Length: 243
Image (cartoon, rainbow, N blue to C red; front, top):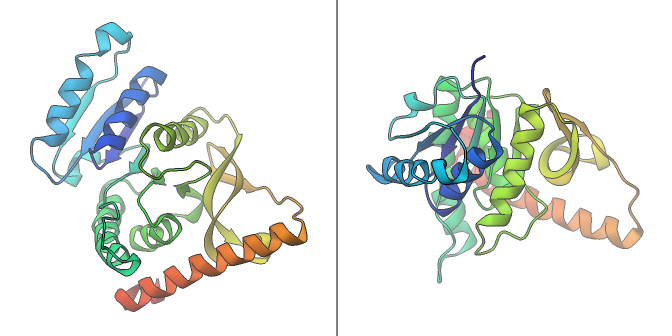
């Protein structure tokens, strides 16, 4: 029986944590990708050395070419830069938007059938852009949501692994994620954090819950903020508007 292939795009702290969790959960073999030569290879070797102690047999491979992710069943994207002191939201948006364009091209060419989980910030705008750049179905491109991710590694990784596991094992778990809405909650064409059912079909259902007036107002404010970011993305990369 063929083993699942999980590609991790970005081999920083979260990428390394993800790779270890994939092994511990026995979800499949791991490919760590990063543009920095030596980083994914070294991190893969480091984690592999823990496998006899932790009792897993996942194969970990480090690559610097998107060809290495070919045929991946799941791709988890952490590539990008964190917001640094003095950096504006627009600065971060512009830098990471370029990263998403590169990642999207890699996914489109080498892993068009993958289930993709994005962790890159600003999240809702980046997962929207990644879906546009990659051309993958909206049901197969989601964003990590539901946990506080500021200056954290383990919670975002655990959240992403839960999504990957529910997809690979068709668990149909109800999980919070940034999902593409097509009329649910009165929103169309925007990625928003909502509860969804994730199974072998990707996002199989968006769960709509009744919101109080106060909750609806907060939700609407959140949607407006996301739409403001996606509009900013189209100004930076006008070709996104036609995708």
